[in-house]
Amino acid sequence: MRSAATVKLPTLDPGALPVARPRLPRADDILPYLRRIDDARWYSNFGPLLTELELRLASRFTDGAVAATVVNATQALTLTLQAMDLPAGSLVATPSWTFVATAHAIAQAGLVPWFLDVDHASQMLHPAQVRDQLGRAPGQVSAVLPVAAHGAMPDIEAWLAFREETGLAVLLDAAAAFDAARDARLPTVVSLHATKVLGIGEGGFLVTDDAALAFRVRRMTTYGFNGTREAQIAGTNAKLSEYTAAVGLAALDQWPADRLRFFLAAQHTRIGLAMTPSVVPQLGWGSDWVTSVCVVRLPNGAAQAATETLMAHGVETRRWWGRGCHQDAAFARYPRTALPITERLAQSVIGLPFAIDLARDDVDRVVRALRATPGIA
Image (cartoon, rainbow, N blue to C red; front, side, top):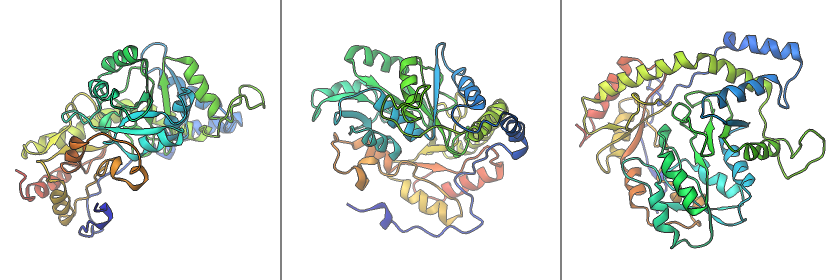
């Protein structure tokens, strides 16, 4: 099996167009919140700023939503799986077509990733696919962890029906879906990493209408404490500080305006890509929802050639999900079904440069480089 590390690409010059240019709130926007920290002299351990941040995050979701912040989304996934009290060593059905954090979280929770294939159109796991495979599972299946592909949301109603029908726990990895995620009936983890559409540096949160689940996760982020110095359950230190909450509150203040700017940048990109009909953005991207990346599908097998051509033209790209988790050495021993669609997507999906302030000239530069790739028109 050839490792991705053996693929030789042209060296990117210093003037290259980067694939991502994250932007967090400026110091002046954070300063009023820092002054509140100075006045309160409360720096961590669920202070007033973090409490406000969690309430504002929860308010974006359906009634009854509770948000529990965690030091990052990977830990949020891990702790939520642990809080679900699933049988140790049981299988968690999940797509291989995802970022490795999904599989790492399952393994760190003491569970076993069971890699399933995804739907070709949505790039996501579908309940019907899981139902079809349950009878052939190589062990006890206790949960399913679908993934919101690059910020697009799956069919929540279908997953709720699946959970009701099978009795299996379902946890949604919506790391990149801050904008589109709004329904707390399915426990959902969202990332607030600096590279995300709403970033705070490092961070993430679980949102759910199951207050008891959120409470268990909260206790696990603070050594199993609950109002005393006695560890009532096994836990860790995975809470956010007031300083991180200050960045989050400033980011939420700017979100309505930033969201419009992301939409505008996405529309410019979609208009530019209209000149290359064989390059297809995700359904709804830049019209129904936004995220911090531009993920496109190319003609079958064209991803490597496009990557090489773009880099030769000074345009950086990224294969955000590589060749699928099952191809990584860390996950090679875990069970999986046949994954033909995942392997096909790995050869036809790439990330193009995108940012909140992406200029039209930059879009034109990307399009010109794409059109120079053999087989793309």
